[in-house]
Structure formats: C-alpha cells, structure tokens
Image (cartoon, rainbow, N blue to C red):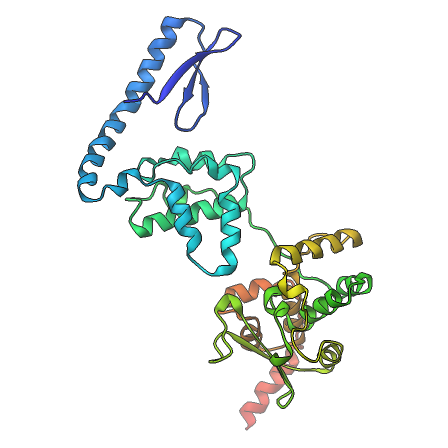
Length: 346
C-alpha cells in the first residue's frame, strides 16, 4: 500500500510533508530527522485506516461491478460532454481541457475525497465556469450510480460569484450601429435590438421565416428545441414599422445573414466585444440585447406573460431578472381609486 505522505527537506534544513493526493506541502516545523520521521509515520498511520476500509469496500464492489473500481473522472467528463444539446458541447470540452480539471482526470471516482475537489476549485485559473462544471459532473456521476455517495454536501460547496449582465442602452446601440462599417453585421445588431432574440436564433433567420400575409416573423428557439413543423419552441413577432424598414434592407431570398450564420457563437461574441472595446462601452456582451429587449418591454407596459412567451422564458424569476433594471412609470393612486369606485357603481 502506497503511503499518502512523503517527506523531503528544504535548503533551510526544515523538513516538509507532501500530500500525494492533493499535492499540497506542509511544514513539519523541525530540522531533526528522527522527529520528522516520527511525525511522517503518524500522518501515514492516520491515513491508512480509512484507506484500508475503502480497500475492503472495493473488494465487495468489484464482485458486482468491476468498472466501479477502475472508472476515472476522465470517463465521467467524456460521457457528460456527449449529453445535452449540441450548442453546449464545445463549451464543455473547452472547460474540461483547462488546467484545473487536469488535476482530477486520472483520479478514480471511487477514491474521490473533498480534497480532490477543493484542489480543482483552488487552482489559480479556476473560476465560475470551473465550479459550475465540477458540480455538474459530480452530480452527473452520482445520478449514474458511478459515485456511490456525494463527496460534498450541498452546503459545503463554495458560493458562486455570479456575473450580472447589464442591458444595452439605446444610446450605446446607436453608437455601435453608427460605427459598424460591415453592413451585414450592422443589420444583425439591428435585428437583435428589434427582436430580442438569442444570437444563434437570429443569425439563422431566412426569408422563409417572414410571413407577409400575417405580417409576422417567426424564429425557432434552438435552446428549446424549436421546430417549424409543429410550432414547438417558436417565437412569433408582429412586424412593426422599424422592423419592416430593416427587412426591406435584407436579402429577399435565402439567409438574411449568410456570413454571420456560419460563424460560431464565440466568434460573434468576440467581434461584438471588440467593437464595444473600441467605443469604450464596458460590461456589455452580445446577450445584453436580450436584456435590453426585456427592459424595454417592461418599461412599455407589455404584459409579463406576453414578454415571457416572446423571449422563451418559462420561469417568472428568470424573466424578472432580465427586466429588473427597467424604469417603470406607475399611474397615480387616484387612477386606481377612481376605477374601483366605477366598478362599485356598476
């Protein structure tokens, strides 16, 4: 059985321990070799008993399912990448190729302890994305039965430093439009402003999505598995004067944005970020167009259910988060009191 701790001596003469699991180093605060060896033996002896118990458990489990004893987190990551919608697979793969996850890849799932997870979370390049996907694969392995019990309880996970998205203002949008020399990309930003659609949904719009008889434009929410054949996950928006003017400047046949439609979402986002950086617009991303539409809808007094249906939000809490910064003008109390008196008289 391999010892968990090994001892080494630094140039100053002090002895240190190195944890072979977490790779952390700890000073023994002594320069006496005999004393240091006694401390090393005590640390390894304390770690051996739980390890012995786990070894016995593995012997029983191997009879039922040999894979449980050999499966590593690399297998969990590979299986998790294959799950979910196509648009998120690239994002998952990039996350698991990062240096924090390299610490965990070769670790056996059955041998995982909280120290292994904290080693990933404490890596200098770990961020919100690292914590998000680490928790996801932890729960994924648990649901598959590959992890016999939770490594950490819910309360033990560090709190996420949530990023707050901010809506794009009308003035900022106009500055971007005025500065954008590429006509197709300028029209793309205008379409995002008028529809509030997600970037991938709007980038794939074609002339077939416009119904001139009903004066509407329809686009599928890819995230919701939208399909044109049964209207599942579709957004249908009446065409107003401003949107009609924009459509008159777009191709009458085929894709509205032929070059942008073949770009990857990350490339479209990067291009928008560069434009904002040149203009000195801070804290805005391409998704800010959806926040802007939600705030404008709330300010204009659009019924919440109608706005939720348009944006594809099923949760009122999520929809409220999109429009929380909107400035809503309320009618005077006398207006509602007069309405109540009229109802009583009637």
